Length: 175
Image (cartoon, rainbow, N blue to C red; front, side):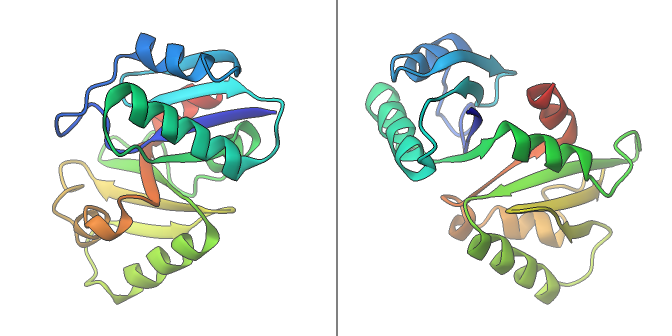
């Protein structure tokens, strides 16, 4: 089965993981065809197991041991990643906005994030539920950290259960 591990909070805030070291760490778990993408904690691989919880825990444990930090990942199948890419409800070519895919660890997190969004003041950004555990976010360029939803995403409550990627990153990983 083809997977992508999306690491949360690396190469920002003092946690630096080089792509070569990330690939080596994941490959050491016996996973195949390990490839990293960009420098923001994205790694694609194949695994014989379909036990997602076990695989997620093994990768987080290996990252924590190797790099000395409390590691969190969202683990998605390549099919889920491609579906998230294909169903983007916004114009990915719009140069005035950034489109993000927020990957949630589970459906409960996704639903809670969508509900929280409904409770926020309306900004110029748009948020929509996506397939599975995905939330889509479209925000004017330069507003991602200042928008109501951007500020919400930055809260510690979402740290262990969400990670977001720009749609261009999702396209690269899914290709």
